[in-house]
Image 1 (cartoon, helix red, strand yellow):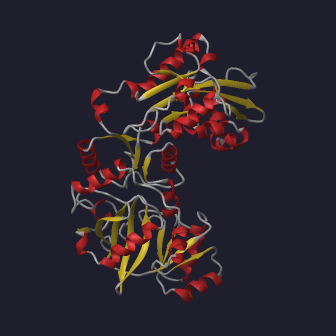
Image 2 (cartoon, one colour):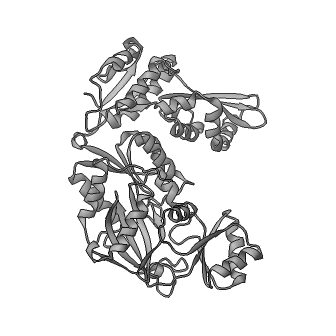
Image 3 (cartoon, one colour):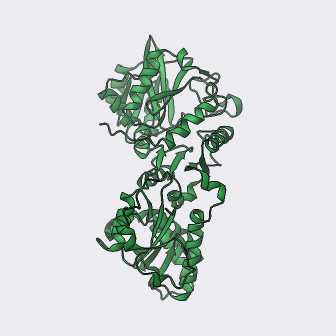
Length: 497
């Protein structure tokens, strides 16, 4: 079966374009029972039906494509989202400022314009001024052709986003659509021969500018080398490649995750597209918020550092904290990472000052007992099994692993990687138990060992995997286990309340 199918209502509709073996009548697609998902590599489908209305041939084509395990554009979710104007305009609210600026640039030579309409072809616009807006709307609602209308009332705003049939295009638009389709589909039907031998296509999301990335360059290269040996095509992508996700079978996020930026959007979109995802969106939601994880561990009797959440800095709140903990205390913003948003306070005045500072950023602040240790355990867990074990030592002369007041070698403490059989069993058991409450992906559990007990500090959904640190014991075998997590297609999300 073909790796790419282009669906149309009538073959005659395609006469303005070059003939292609990938063309197929939508009705034939609907009734061909041999178009299942038995292939190792999923079929990609471009749905160019004239109508996507509910229960139309175009709608059923996207519906059946998803049920067959095919990668379809537009997806059923996109069709349903675009059918509800109030909902999709709400989703595009953050783009209204982008639309306003683009419209003002477009109309600077004409004050009479009160409405603008332009078309977006696979994320591309003929009008350069609308290029960025078109790409961002397409990333929200991937569809072959979209017509975006902007209206001026008090301010320029997006008024509507509507799918357009390719049969409605004029000759000039047909040429631009054809080129955009060729650019989009070249990745699928004109791939170099070597890539066609791979059994799995994996996108690796990275940020070349990130200072504290979860994997260093050597680790990424080692992983890519192992992937190639195992028949996995891997390609690094960046935040600009959201609309390309349906070219791949899996997504591996090697950029610090947060629900506030594109990393969560990538994870969420990939899951919607049916990709195997590490980190999955639910793991990101859970692990990046210490409020959730604290309550999850309390409900499930997971031992953790003595902790409390506070919502104000009144004297009564300070007194209650002092009854629970001695000074110094550790204060944390719930969604911090790499020791950012973490401070140690030595007395009541510092406690009050830092709380006031943190409450400007978060309605809740986590307060923990200060339990000094030479190191924290970091246990890597993949699919419910321990992957690696490290001792992360505190930065020289500092109480944290990372000292953000320093640069260079003293920024972070030393590390020691141990074979799993040399790690106390109760440490590993605790790590596996707590990650089982989150999901079935890749996690890094920070644990303090105190009086023979494992106290969980936090669970990270995006753990570091660096060369000569986390991979020191297993070497290439660690990367092979990671690769297997994708091609075995066993990374799922466990919904635990």
